[in-house]
Image (tube, rainbow, N blue to C red; front, side):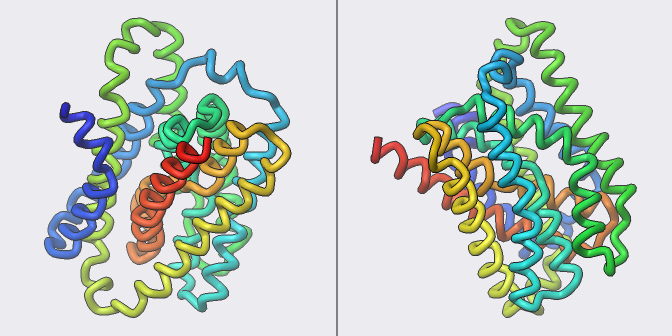
Length: 300
C-alpha cells in the first residue's frame, strides 16, 4: 500500500487521531497560526484535479437544485443550534459550517458511490467562488447580533479559497498533461492539510473540551441532525433525476467542508469555541459518507 493510499483510505482514522492528539497535547494549537496557508494548500491541491471538461457536462437545472440545497444549509444549521439552546458563539460556528462549501472529498465519495462526479465537482467550484459573498452575508443575516467580523472572513475566502481554486483550475487547463502526472498525489496532500487543521483547532479548544464534556453532547446531536438533514434535502431535490445525479446531490448538500469552516473561524479571529461544531461534524460526516458510498454501491 502506497503512502497516498494509506492517507486517503484511512482518513477517518487520521482525523480521530488528530482530535485525540489535540485534546492530549494543547501545544499543537500552534498549527492554527498557519491556518490560511494550510487552507490554501488544501484547496489548491485538490483543485488541481479539476478539468474544464468536467464543467461542460453539467445541466444547469441539476446544478441549480444542488445550489438551492446549499443555500438552505446555513438556515437549517441556525435552526438546529437555536433548538438545542447553544451559545451565540457555537451558533456562529454552526452557521459558518452550514454555509461552507461542500466537503473537498465530495467528488471522491461521489465517484465511489457511483454518482455523477462531474456534478459534484462543478458544484464545489461554483459554490467555492460564490462563498466570498454568500458566507459573510448569511452570517450577518442570521447571527448579526453577535460581533462577527465579516471583512476578515471575506479576505480569508479570497486568499485561501477562491484564488487557490481558480489558479489551480487555470494551471490544469494550461498544462493538463504535466499537472495530470501527479493526480494520484493531490487528494492525499489535501487530506493531510485537513488532518493538520483539525488537530490544531481541537488543541485550541482542548481546555474547553475537558471542562465541558456535557457541551459536546449537544454539539454532537446538532451535527448528526444537520448532516442527516443535508442528505435529506439533497434526496428530495434530486428525486426526479437519474440515480447518478441523485447520489451527487445527496452528497454535495449533506457534506460540509468542516476543515474550511474551522479554518475560517480561527483565521477570522472568532472565538475558538466556534470551531467545535466543525470538528465534530468532520468525524460524523466522514463516517456517514463512507457508509452511504458503500450502500449505494451495494444497491446498484
